[in-house]
Amino acid sequence: MTTPTIVREFEADLVVTDSHVVADDVVALTLAAADGSSLPPWTPGAHVDLVLGDELVRQYSLCSSPGDRSAWRLGILRTPDSRGGSKAVHSELRSGSTVRVRGPRNHFPLVAAGSYLFIAGGIGITPLLPMIAEADAAGADWHLLYGGRTRGSMAFLDELEPYGDRVTLVPQDECGLLDLDAALGTPREGTLVYTCGPTGLLDAIEARCATWPSGTLHLERFVAKTPEAGAPGNTEFELVLQRSGLTLTVPADKSVFEVCKEAGVSVVGSCLEGICGTCESEVVDGDVDHRDSVLNEEERESNEYMMICVSRCRSARLTLDL
Image (cartoon, rainbow, N blue to C red; front, side, top):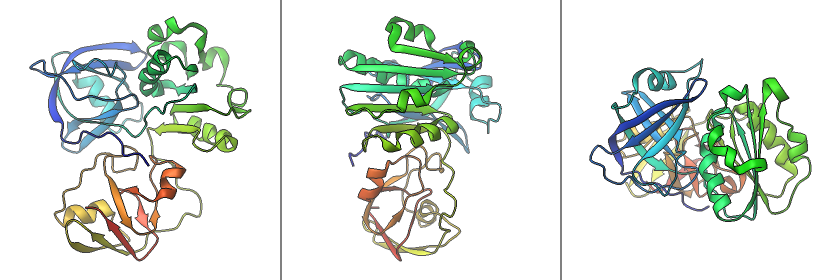
Protein backbone atom coordinates (compact mmCIF):
# COMPACT_ATOMS: atom_id res chain seq x y z
CA MET A 1 0.00 0.00 0.00
CA THR A 2 1.25 3.46 -0.85
CA THR A 3 1.33 5.72 2.19
CA PRO A 4 -1.26 8.47 1.59
CA THR A 5 -0.26 12.10 1.45
CA ILE A 6 -1.25 13.54 4.82
CA VAL A 7 -0.49 16.96 6.25
CA ARG A 8 -1.65 16.32 9.80
CA GLU A 9 0.13 19.29 11.31
CA PHE A 10 -1.89 21.89 9.40
CA GLU A 11 -4.77 23.24 11.44
CA ALA A 12 -5.85 26.85 11.16
CA ASP A 13 -8.78 29.22 11.12
CA LEU A 14 -9.46 30.05 7.49
CA VAL A 15 -11.63 32.84 6.15
CA VAL A 16 -14.61 32.20 3.89
CA THR A 17 -13.78 34.53 0.99
CA ASP A 18 -16.74 33.48 -1.15
CA SER A 19 -19.99 31.62 -0.58
CA HIS A 20 -22.57 31.09 -3.27
CA VAL A 21 -25.22 28.59 -4.33
CA VAL A 22 -24.16 26.32 -7.21
CA ALA A 23 -27.22 24.00 -7.28
CA ASP A 24 -30.35 23.27 -5.27
CA ASP A 25 -29.22 22.97 -1.63
CA VAL A 26 -25.54 23.05 -2.63
CA VAL A 27 -23.22 25.87 -1.59
CA ALA A 28 -19.64 26.40 -2.76
CA LEU A 29 -17.30 27.80 -0.12
CA THR A 30 -13.90 29.29 -0.91
CA LEU A 31 -11.47 29.31 2.01
CA ALA A 32 -8.20 31.22 2.35
CA ALA A 33 -5.69 32.21 5.01
CA ALA A 34 -6.43 35.58 6.59
CA ASP A 35 -2.88 36.77 5.91
CA GLY A 36 -2.92 35.60 2.29
CA SER A 37 -0.29 32.92 2.87
CA SER A 38 -0.23 29.76 0.76
CA LEU A 39 -2.20 26.74 1.87
CA PRO A 40 -0.68 23.23 2.01
CA PRO A 41 -0.43 21.29 -1.27
CA TRP A 42 -2.98 18.62 -2.11
CA THR A 43 -3.82 16.15 -4.84
CA PRO A 44 -7.14 15.25 -6.53
CA GLY A 45 -9.33 13.19 -4.20
CA ALA A 46 -8.19 14.98 -1.02
CA HIS A 47 -10.54 16.21 1.66
CA VAL A 48 -10.32 18.47 4.71
CA ASP A 49 -12.02 18.56 8.09
CA LEU A 50 -14.25 21.48 9.00
CA VAL A 51 -14.40 21.89 12.78
CA LEU A 52 -17.91 23.26 13.18
CA GLY A 53 -18.25 22.82 16.92
CA ASP A 54 -16.68 21.13 19.95
CA GLU A 55 -18.03 17.72 18.90
CA LEU A 56 -18.94 18.55 15.32
CA VAL A 57 -16.27 17.73 12.74
CA ARG A 58 -17.14 16.91 9.14
CA GLN A 59 -15.09 15.99 6.06
CA TYR A 60 -15.57 17.65 2.67
CA SER A 61 -13.76 17.07 -0.62
CA LEU A 62 -11.59 19.76 -2.16
CA CYS A 63 -12.95 20.62 -5.61
CA SER A 64 -10.78 23.52 -6.75
CA SER A 65 -7.48 23.34 -8.62
CA PRO A 66 -4.53 21.74 -6.77
CA GLY A 67 -2.33 24.25 -8.56
CA ASP A 68 -3.99 27.16 -6.77
CA ARG A 69 -2.36 27.37 -3.32
CA SER A 70 -4.11 30.64 -2.48
CA ALA A 71 -7.50 29.11 -1.69
CA TRP A 72 -9.49 25.90 -1.28
CA ARG A 73 -13.01 25.32 -2.56
CA LEU A 74 -15.61 22.94 -1.13
CA GLY A 75 -19.04 22.00 -2.44
CA ILE A 76 -21.44 21.16 0.40
CA LEU A 77 -24.94 19.72 0.17
CA ARG A 78 -27.59 20.55 2.76
CA THR A 79 -28.95 17.11 3.62
CA PRO A 80 -32.46 16.68 5.06
CA ASP A 81 -31.19 14.17 7.63
CA SER A 82 -28.19 16.29 8.61
CA ARG A 83 -26.61 15.43 11.95
CA GLY A 84 -25.57 19.07 12.23
CA GLY A 85 -22.68 19.46 9.77
CA SER A 86 -24.31 20.60 6.55
CA LYS A 87 -26.93 22.52 8.52
CA ALA A 88 -24.19 24.48 10.28
CA VAL A 89 -22.39 25.21 7.02
CA HIS A 90 -25.51 26.46 5.25
CA SER A 91 -26.86 28.48 8.15
CA GLU A 92 -23.71 29.88 9.76
CA LEU A 93 -20.89 30.22 7.22
CA ARG A 94 -20.96 33.31 5.02
CA SER A 95 -18.35 35.44 3.25
CA GLY A 96 -16.17 36.85 6.01
CA SER A 97 -16.82 33.98 8.43
CA THR A 98 -13.92 31.99 9.87
CA VAL A 99 -13.85 28.24 10.29
CA ARG A 100 -11.30 25.85 11.77
CA VAL A 101 -9.85 23.56 9.09
CA ARG A 102 -7.62 20.48 9.34
CA GLY A 103 -5.89 18.55 6.56
CA PRO A 104 -5.70 17.94 3.72
CA ARG A 105 -5.47 14.15 3.52
CA ASN A 106 -6.07 11.83 0.61
CA HIS A 107 -7.26 8.23 0.70
CA PHE A 108 -8.88 8.53 -2.73
CA PRO A 109 -5.91 9.37 -4.98
CA LEU A 110 -6.02 9.35 -8.77
CA VAL A 111 -3.82 6.53 -10.07
CA ALA A 112 -2.15 7.15 -13.43
CA ALA A 113 -3.94 5.31 -16.26
CA GLY A 114 -4.64 5.64 -19.95
CA SER A 115 -8.42 5.42 -19.53
CA TYR A 116 -10.93 6.36 -16.83
CA LEU A 117 -14.65 6.03 -16.24
CA PHE A 118 -15.85 8.53 -13.65
CA ILE A 119 -19.30 8.00 -12.11
CA ALA A 120 -20.78 10.68 -9.85
CA GLY A 121 -24.01 10.64 -7.91
CA GLY A 122 -25.18 14.05 -6.72
CA ILE A 123 -22.65 15.84 -4.51
CA GLY A 124 -20.25 12.97 -5.28
CA ILE A 125 -19.10 15.10 -8.21
CA THR A 126 -16.89 17.18 -5.88
CA PRO A 127 -13.82 14.91 -5.54
CA LEU A 128 -14.09 13.95 -9.21
CA LEU A 129 -13.81 17.50 -10.58
CA PRO A 130 -10.05 17.90 -9.99
CA MET A 131 -9.51 14.27 -11.07
CA ILE A 132 -11.19 14.95 -14.40
CA ALA A 133 -9.10 18.08 -14.91
CA GLU A 134 -5.90 16.11 -14.21
CA ALA A 135 -6.89 13.22 -16.47
CA ASP A 136 -7.78 15.61 -19.26
CA ALA A 137 -4.51 17.54 -18.89
CA ALA A 138 -2.60 14.24 -19.06
CA GLY A 139 -4.27 13.35 -22.35
CA ALA A 140 -6.05 10.30 -20.92
CA ASP A 141 -9.19 8.85 -22.44
CA TRP A 142 -12.03 9.47 -20.00
CA HIS A 143 -15.78 9.74 -19.66
CA LEU A 144 -18.03 11.00 -16.87
CA LEU A 145 -21.49 9.68 -16.01
CA TYR A 146 -23.13 12.19 -13.69
CA GLY A 147 -26.51 11.47 -12.16
CA GLY A 148 -28.73 13.57 -9.93
CA ARG A 149 -32.35 13.95 -8.88
CA THR A 150 -32.91 16.90 -11.21
CA ARG A 151 -30.74 19.03 -13.43
CA GLY A 152 -31.10 21.87 -10.92
CA SER A 153 -29.69 19.68 -8.14
CA MET A 154 -26.49 18.87 -10.06
CA ALA A 155 -23.64 21.18 -9.08
CA PHE A 156 -20.85 22.59 -11.25
CA LEU A 157 -22.51 21.88 -14.60
CA ASP A 158 -21.01 25.08 -16.02
CA GLU A 159 -17.49 23.75 -15.34
CA LEU A 160 -18.27 20.46 -17.06
CA GLU A 161 -19.86 21.97 -20.16
CA PRO A 162 -16.55 22.67 -21.99
CA TYR A 163 -15.77 18.93 -21.96
CA GLY A 164 -18.62 18.32 -24.40
CA ASP A 165 -19.64 14.73 -25.09
CA ARG A 166 -17.11 13.32 -22.65
CA VAL A 167 -19.74 14.13 -20.02
CA THR A 168 -23.11 12.35 -19.87
CA LEU A 169 -25.65 14.05 -17.61
CA VAL A 170 -28.46 11.87 -16.27
CA PRO A 171 -31.06 13.88 -14.31
CA GLN A 172 -33.35 11.22 -12.87
CA ASP A 173 -36.58 13.13 -13.50
CA GLU A 174 -35.69 13.41 -17.21
CA CYS A 175 -33.74 10.21 -17.96
CA GLY A 176 -34.26 7.77 -15.10
CA LEU A 177 -31.40 6.16 -13.22
CA LEU A 178 -27.83 5.76 -14.46
CA ASP A 179 -27.56 2.74 -16.79
CA LEU A 180 -24.84 0.91 -14.89
CA ASP A 181 -25.30 -2.30 -16.86
CA ALA A 182 -24.43 -0.50 -20.07
CA ALA A 183 -21.51 1.33 -18.48
CA LEU A 184 -20.03 -1.56 -16.54
CA GLY A 185 -21.46 -4.70 -18.13
CA THR A 186 -18.31 -5.46 -20.11
CA PRO A 187 -14.98 -5.30 -18.21
CA ARG A 188 -12.37 -3.16 -19.96
CA GLU A 189 -8.70 -3.87 -19.40
CA GLY A 190 -6.71 -0.72 -18.60
CA THR A 191 -9.72 1.38 -17.57
CA LEU A 192 -10.00 2.57 -13.96
CA VAL A 193 -13.41 3.33 -12.46
CA TYR A 194 -13.64 6.23 -10.01
CA THR A 195 -16.92 6.87 -8.25
CA CYS A 196 -18.42 8.84 -5.38
CA GLY A 197 -22.02 9.28 -4.32
CA PRO A 198 -24.81 7.79 -2.21
CA THR A 199 -24.50 4.33 -0.69
CA GLY A 200 -26.99 2.65 -3.02
CA LEU A 201 -25.12 3.79 -6.11
CA LEU A 202 -21.73 2.75 -4.75
CA ASP A 203 -23.00 -0.68 -3.72
CA ALA A 204 -24.46 -1.21 -7.20
CA ILE A 205 -21.21 -0.16 -8.88
CA GLU A 206 -19.17 -2.33 -6.55
CA ALA A 207 -21.30 -5.36 -7.44
CA ARG A 208 -20.96 -4.77 -11.18
CA CYS A 209 -17.19 -4.25 -10.94
CA ALA A 210 -16.69 -7.61 -9.22
CA THR A 211 -15.84 -9.18 -12.60
CA TRP A 212 -13.49 -6.38 -13.65
CA PRO A 213 -9.70 -6.72 -13.21
CA SER A 214 -8.43 -6.39 -9.65
CA GLY A 215 -7.67 -2.79 -8.72
CA THR A 216 -10.12 -1.32 -11.24
CA LEU A 217 -12.59 0.23 -8.83
CA HIS A 218 -11.78 3.25 -6.67
CA LEU A 219 -14.57 4.71 -4.57
CA GLU A 220 -15.15 7.10 -1.71
CA ARG A 221 -18.06 6.77 0.67
CA PHE A 222 -19.79 9.58 2.55
CA VAL A 223 -21.45 7.06 4.89
CA ALA A 224 -19.89 3.99 6.48
CA LYS A 225 -20.61 0.73 4.69
CA THR A 226 -23.23 -1.48 6.37
CA PRO A 227 -21.61 -4.55 7.99
CA GLU A 228 -22.24 -7.77 6.13
CA ALA A 229 -24.78 -10.20 7.58
CA GLY A 230 -23.12 -12.69 9.89
CA ALA A 231 -20.11 -10.46 10.54
CA PRO A 232 -18.25 -11.47 13.73
CA GLY A 233 -18.96 -9.63 16.95
CA ASN A 234 -16.44 -7.82 19.10
CA THR A 235 -14.01 -9.74 21.29
CA GLU A 236 -11.35 -8.61 23.75
CA PHE A 237 -7.70 -8.59 22.64
CA GLU A 238 -4.28 -7.38 23.77
CA LEU A 239 -2.90 -4.20 22.20
CA VAL A 240 0.85 -3.57 22.06
CA LEU A 241 1.95 -0.03 21.19
CA GLN A 242 5.52 -0.52 19.99
CA ARG A 243 6.82 3.07 20.12
CA SER A 244 5.02 3.94 23.36
CA GLY A 245 6.13 0.75 25.10
CA LEU A 246 2.62 0.06 26.35
CA THR A 247 0.59 -3.13 26.49
CA LEU A 248 -3.13 -2.47 26.86
CA THR A 249 -6.37 -4.41 26.75
CA VAL A 250 -9.05 -3.56 24.21
CA PRO A 251 -12.37 -4.76 25.66
CA ALA A 252 -15.28 -5.79 23.46
CA ASP A 253 -17.14 -2.54 24.12
CA LYS A 254 -14.31 -0.13 23.24
CA SER A 255 -12.34 0.69 20.09
CA VAL A 256 -8.56 0.73 19.69
CA PHE A 257 -8.82 4.50 19.27
CA GLU A 258 -10.68 4.92 22.58
CA VAL A 259 -8.23 2.72 24.49
CA CYS A 260 -5.26 4.65 23.09
CA LYS A 261 -6.81 8.01 24.04
CA GLU A 262 -7.59 6.81 27.56
CA ALA A 263 -3.96 5.69 27.93
CA GLY A 264 -2.73 9.17 26.99
CA VAL A 265 -1.34 8.10 23.61
CA SER A 266 -1.40 10.78 20.92
CA VAL A 267 -3.78 9.57 18.19
CA VAL A 268 -5.75 11.69 15.74
CA GLY A 269 -9.32 10.91 14.69
CA SER A 270 -12.17 12.70 13.01
CA CYS A 271 -15.21 10.83 11.71
CA LEU A 272 -14.75 7.83 14.07
CA GLU A 273 -16.83 5.83 11.57
CA GLY A 274 -14.08 4.46 9.34
CA ILE A 275 -14.71 6.72 6.35
CA CYS A 276 -12.20 9.59 6.56
CA GLY A 277 -8.88 7.77 7.12
CA THR A 278 -7.59 10.25 9.71
CA CYS A 279 -6.84 7.58 12.32
CA GLU A 280 -4.90 5.27 9.97
CA SER A 281 -2.15 3.47 11.89
CA GLU A 282 0.65 1.14 10.82
CA VAL A 283 0.26 -2.53 11.77
CA VAL A 284 3.37 -4.34 13.02
CA ASP A 285 1.75 -7.67 13.85
CA GLY A 286 -1.71 -9.19 14.24
CA ASP A 287 -4.63 -10.38 12.12
CA VAL A 288 -6.69 -7.23 11.54
CA ASP A 289 -10.47 -7.37 11.22
CA HIS A 290 -10.89 -4.47 8.78
CA ARG A 291 -14.24 -2.73 9.20
CA ASP A 292 -13.50 0.60 7.53
CA SER A 293 -14.84 2.03 4.28
CA VAL A 294 -11.46 3.43 3.17
CA LEU A 295 -9.10 0.59 2.27
CA ASN A 296 -9.63 -1.56 -0.83
CA GLU A 297 -9.34 -5.34 -0.80
CA GLU A 298 -5.67 -5.38 -1.81
CA GLU A 299 -4.81 -2.91 0.96
CA ARG A 300 -6.72 -4.97 3.51
CA GLU A 301 -4.98 -8.16 2.46
CA SER A 302 -1.58 -6.48 2.82
CA ASN A 303 -2.41 -5.92 6.52
CA GLU A 304 -0.05 -2.94 6.65
CA TYR A 305 -2.47 -0.28 7.93
CA MET A 306 -5.77 -0.12 9.79
CA MET A 307 -8.34 2.46 10.85
CA ILE A 308 -8.26 2.22 14.63
CA CYS A 309 -11.63 3.90 15.15
CA VAL A 310 -13.60 0.88 13.87
CA SER A 311 -11.29 -2.01 12.90
CA ARG A 312 -10.35 -4.66 15.42
CA CYS A 313 -8.19 -7.81 15.70
CA ARG A 314 -9.06 -11.43 15.03
CA SER A 315 -5.96 -12.72 16.82
CA ALA A 316 -5.22 -12.51 20.56
CA ARG A 317 -2.67 -9.71 20.12
CA LEU A 318 -2.36 -6.65 17.91
CA THR A 319 0.87 -4.64 17.65
CA LEU A 320 0.79 -1.13 16.21
CA ASP A 321 3.52 1.41 15.42
CA LEU A 322 2.21 3.89 17.95
